[in-house]
Image (cartoon, rainbow, N blue to C red; front, side, top):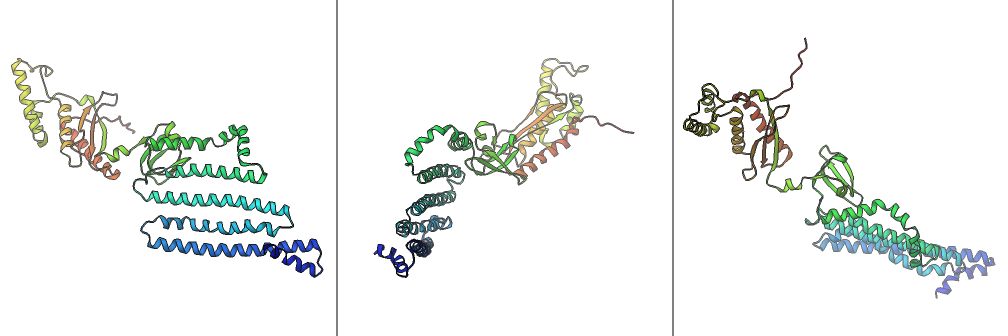
Amino acid sequence: MISYISRLVYDFLIERGISKVTSQYLNAIVLLLVLLLIVFIVDYITRKILLKTFTQFAKISKSNFDDLLVTNKVPRNIAHIIPLLIALKFIPTVFLDFQYFENIVEKGLKVFAIILTLWIIRSLLNTVKDYLKTLSGFRDKPIDSYIQVFMIFAWFGGIMSAIAIITDIPFFKFVTGLGAISAVIILVFKDTILGFVASIQVSINDMVRIGDWITFEKYGADGDVIEINLATVKVQNFDKTITTIPTYALISDSFKNWRGMVNAEGRRIKRSLNIKQSSIKYLSNETIETLKKIHIIAPYLNNKQEDIEAYNTNNNINKDYYPLNGRNLTNIGVFRKYIQTYVEKHSAINKDMTIMVRQLAPTPQGLPIEIYAFSNDKRWENYEYIMADIFDHVLAAIPYFELEIFEYPTKITN
């Protein structure tokens, strides 16, 4: 039957006195047009049926996986398989008298079959990727990296298969011959290989997740990770710009990940102010009595003054001429205790974490007094407000302790 149909136009033209060669060409053209028409009709019908079936199934399904299959064009790509098989089946019939053209078209269809297979694989992988990103356990994982790695190998295998088909060289023999140029391949795919290894290490060691706040000074990145793929990591900085970092830089260079702070119960405040060292002195009894009017350190001053007086009396310390003798209160010590008490009582400070006001080593710019504590609120704007609120108060309190903040002299111009 097929043989009869393949010669139907040819026999009709021969009967009309058309030459054999012309009849063969016209017969092949007509059959090719008919085959193309059939292929397009079958492809259209198959696509409509599959798309409608998947859409109806997606409506009644509770999972969104089938919706993602439709979104990523999986049914559309699968629908091309049946028309492709029909074309491969009937191409020998169409080019019955033209073996050369039959060979070229068959190779073209086989190459298209490889491309179609890769399209289907890519659509399925994109569907899996989109589905996993809807699950809370996978949202911060570098799924894109693994999809890209698989697709690189798939495209590499597909290209090799296509070249083997076009050159009529057996696939395994063709791949074996690539050993001689393996060094060139490694050089070409160097960044891909480095990115692949880096993405695996980043994932296994849980170094970076999507959503992490990282600071990478070398690349000027300071913001949230929005994408991790095979070659790059994208960071949206706080000024809304995007910084792209090579994935392998995460394991070859040093960067800061703020995830520990975000997951902790507080955000650290670590800032110091420099006291002018010439303003540091012993406190007189009159000054101590004045400072007792400050409620939060009045109990401390009462207890401390009693302890000091008892010690000096028991040891017959004479401080009439030299206050240096015996034990004394200093304005810097009382000020440090005041800050400690103030920070401990501050409502925005986490009382379960370290709270410390310490004196650092003296510098040419004064004596640093550092506040080390953790705010309850970790949000950036609120954290800055809390820290500013504390230092506003502390800076305003300095003169009451007869201390001065260090400042560089201002040049006076006439």
